[in-house]
Image (cartoon, rainbow, N blue to C red; front, side, top):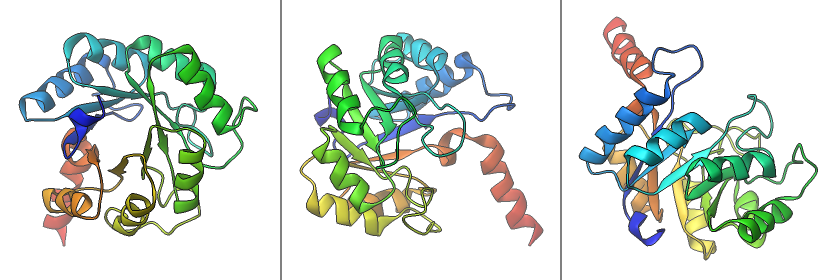
Length: 221
C-alpha cells in the first residue's frame, strides 16, 4: 500500500465545522473528483467521511479523527485510532509528537496496540525532527510533517517546511510524507525534490472558502 503512494499526491478531503461542505457525501464527491485528477491516495477526517469514502474510492485512505483543537487533537487516543480503522481507513494518522496523550499511553504503546489488533499502518503527524525520530523509534510506519509550525518546536513557514522534510528524509528509514501549507504545484514538486516519499495537499485543492479568499485578497491589494 505504501509503495502505491510513492511519488504521488495524496488529497486531504476535509472541511471545517460550520462550513457548507462539512458533509460526508460532499467529501466523498471531492475524493472521487481527486481520483479522476490522478490522486494516489486520500486523507480524510471523521468517521462518517472515512466510512463513505472507503465505500466509493478504491485508493488507499489515511484516516484521522480530530478531537478539539488544542495540544494532542489528531486521533488523540488508542480508542479513536481503532474507530478510524474500523470505519475503513487502511492507514491511521495520529498525533506523533512527544507530548502527553489524553489516555495516558505512550506513542509506542499506542502504535504497538494498533499493530497488534489490526492490519492498519500508522502515520505519525509530527512537528519537529526530534518528534519524527522518536515516532520512528516508537514503531510508526510513516512520518508526516503535518504539525510543523503548530507545536512550538519550529516556526511556521510561509509555505511547506522543506527544511524539515529534508532533515527527516535524510535521517529516517520510514517514508516521510510532506504535508502542511503546500499551496501550489511547484511547492509540491519542491517537497518531492527535498526527499518526501509522497505529498499531501488539502486546502489548495479541497477548500473553496480559503481558495476564494486568496483571490479576493489579491484583488483587494
